[in-house]
Length: 488
Image 1: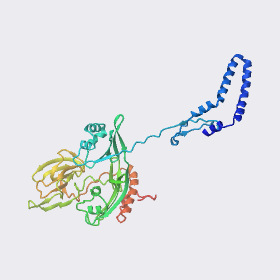
Image 2: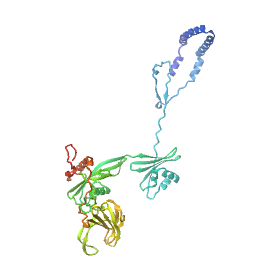
Image 3: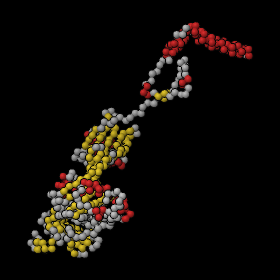
Image 4: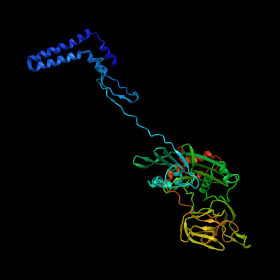
C-alpha cells in the first residue's frame, strides 16, 4: 500500500490536472441545475465545494497527512484473517480494510516439579510435611478436606508422596496413590484447596506357566517363575482333592494360565489364576475361574465346583507327623491306643481354618487336648481341632469354611507344635485324609453355556503349555462337543 501511495504522489502535475477536471465537470453541471432550482441554498453549497477543492489540491496538507500514517505489525502466527466476498473487487487504487480476530493461545498448565518423598519406618505425615517445609496447619486442612484426603493420615513404609512447592507461592499440590488404579491430587487454587481423582491405566497380561515336581511343589513352582503366593493360591484351588502334605510325588505336574498386572511399564503384582491343572499320582484335576453371580470361584470343566463341603486339610499344607491309626503307640503315655485323627506338624501360630461351614459346639481348654475347638456341620459331621496355641471363636459362633478359628500350638499332651484334626461321621471317627467329602451343588443349567464358552479357550491354553499331561476329555463338555470348530 505504501508503494502505491508513493506512486500516486509522484504522478506528473498535468496528469493530475486532467484527472481532476474529468471528475469536476459532471459535478459543475449538477451544481448549475441546483442553482436554477434553489438559488439561495445553492450559492452556499457552491462556495463550500470550491473551498474543498482548493484545500485538496494544496500539496503541503497532503504531505502532512501522509506523514502521520503508521504501520502496525501483527505476529503472523496469531492472526487469522477472513476476507469477505467483495474483497476481490478491490483495485490497485483502493485500500481494503480486513477484519481480523486475534485469539491468544490457550495457556497449558506448567509441568509440575514434584518433590518425591518415600515413607520410612516410624515416619508420620506431620514429620513428612515438616521435612518439605510445610506446617501442621496445612496438614490439618488437607487431611480434613474430604473423605478421600482423610486416608492420607494412614501411611505405611514404602508409600510415596509427591509435593509441588513454589519458593514464593508455597504449597501448590500434593499427589498420593489412592489405590492401584487411581492418583489422588490435592491442589491449591484461587478458592482454596481442591481434590480430584485421576485414573492410572493398568495393563493385564495373560501368561502361562508349567512345571514338573522333582523334590517339592515350591521348588518346581519357583523354577517356573511363580511366586510363593501364587504357589499357595494354586494349592488352595486343588486343596479339596489333593493333600499337599502327603500326596505329592516326584513326577506330579502342574500348569496354569493367570494374569500379571502391569502399570506404566512396570510389573505390579500377580493377578488371578484363570485356569489351572494339577496331575497327582496319575489323576488330573482341572479348574476354571468363573463368576456364577456370587463372585469368582473355581469349577471343574463339567461345572462342578472345586470347592467341596469340607477342606481336605484345615491349614496350609505342611508335614504330617502322625497319621490316623487305630493302634498307635502314644509317645507320652507309652501305651497303645487309637489315634483317631491326623497330626499336622507346623510352626506355632500357623492359622487353623474351619474345614466347613458350621457352628462351634465347644471352645475350651483341658490338660489333655490343650486349647481345642469342636464344630458341628451338616450331614451329622463333627470336626475337632486340638492343641491350639489360641482360640479365635467361642461356643455358639457360626463359622464359614476357611475361616480362621485358632492357631497351631503344643498345649495339652503334645511333644511339639502341631494340629490334631479329627473327622467324625455319625459319631464314628473317619480318616480325614481318605473320607469321601460331599460335593457342593454344580452350576445350574442356565449358566452352563456361558461357562463352557469361557472355559474352552482357557483349557486350550493349558493344553498348549502342558501338552503331555493327561486330559479329562470326558469331563470337559458333558453335553458333547459339536463340530463347530471350538476347542473341546
